[in-house]
Image 1 (tube, helix red, strand yellow):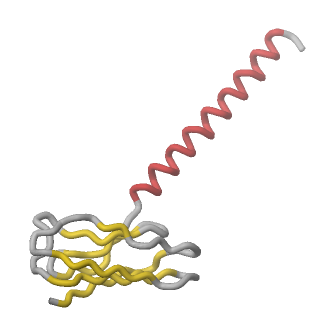
Image 2 (cartoon, rainbow, N blue to C red):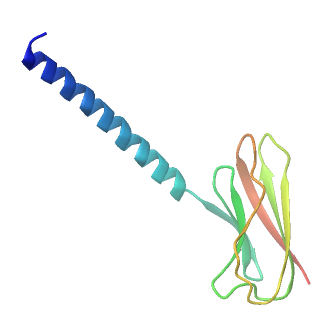
Length: 113
């Protein structure tokens, strides 16, 4: 193989690798950004991605003290529930149990004093 042809093959391979690497970075960044939220009750709500979800509260935390329950509707696997007792002002993000197959469809949050 001539030197010019070898350089052309190497440049084509390098271009292909660069294109695949940039596409995978874009895909990871895009999926990391895609989220949705459920209803908000007394300042707290569920936030979800494809299979992962958390129970979070708005800035300033929970508006009341009590039990906040978030139900995750998992497509093709059992539904998940997280109950967290929060003091007024608690704004900690709490990780819910992931949906293992399928995807997360809805999040519903409930409050009980």
